[in-house]
Length: 476
Image 1 (tube, one colour):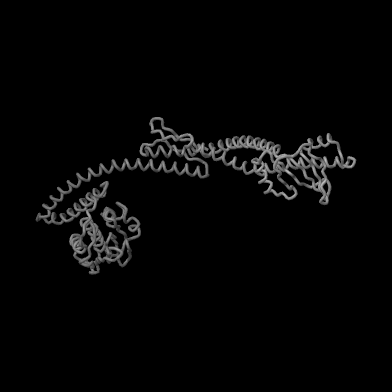
Image 2: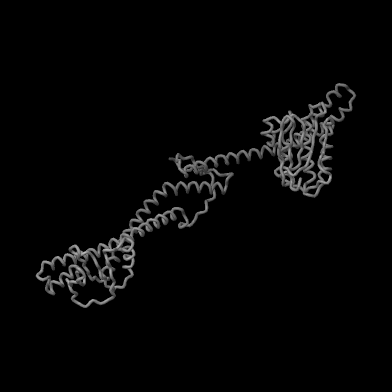
């Protein structure tokens, strides 16, 4: 696995902003791991403390049973005060009583008066839940409390009752809790350290590389020279690193292409400007030649004029499209019908065989830039007329109508071929004319979008083509 980043030492990049150590992912992972382990240890401690307390009590009960068996071997179950005191000390209890058939037999009497609050415990009926609550209560019980414990005796049908002070139990269970806490902290730190190292190697360090790369890319995407190399990891981090590496390469190539295109566009703009001026001069010369009486000149002059017009149109459209930002529209309240008539008069002047049918009501108004709207409609009408230029049977017709969907410009032409439909609004690619630039519809759509609308191909087929212009308030 190769996760390294290639570094170009020849270029100094701005250092990424560094966060505080306690804000880093490594520290947060360590704290989260440590807290999780301590939480699990705390959950385990409750039944563990309950088991310790129960074992402590059972030890005293068992010692008391042993003492009871020793008493059974004694004559009349009587022992001396000295032996009784020794048995009480060995059992770590204050007194031992045996109950049989509701009769109480004092086996080992307390050598001193028992003082303190009595608290009864019946080990025969305890459950895991009750033992757990009692274990937690042992930490907060008063030291002068005295426990009176009932348990099964040394023989069936017998119940043994022992009196035990609370203070030794509280001291022992507190010491046990301290030992468990120290061991839990040790385990937690060791486990957290191991998990931290593994997470740092597998997660944090690769993510740090990805983050560093993204920050450097953000600070200077154009001049960025450090690259993430692809990795063989197939998990989420590996996929993120590979995706970022591909994105960096793609964006870097885009920046290089953009710089080249900007330089090329600047050169083309200069060439087009000079070319348009030269073509304008040539057009003046062609106008002079058109008035010549020489038959050969009269025959060639129309071809020359058409060639010059196409060249000027190409240069103009290219310059218009090459502008960084189109001219902002000047929105005003306009009447749609006269704008359509003016655009038709300009676009269809050289196509007398095309029937013009304006179905837009004369009172139709909308908010738009009249110049932009004129350019859009002129382009659509000119394209439709050229598409029907081969129809000489009088069927060529352009119908413009407004509805709630927008302004529809329909023709009765042969329709658009498949490739033309796919590239219709792509510059230099969507023209169906032999000498077209493919910029007319692109510019028209940009003008429509600049006024808050859009230009789309509604439908096309052998019965004709319909373009739809949508603008705010049109057809409302």
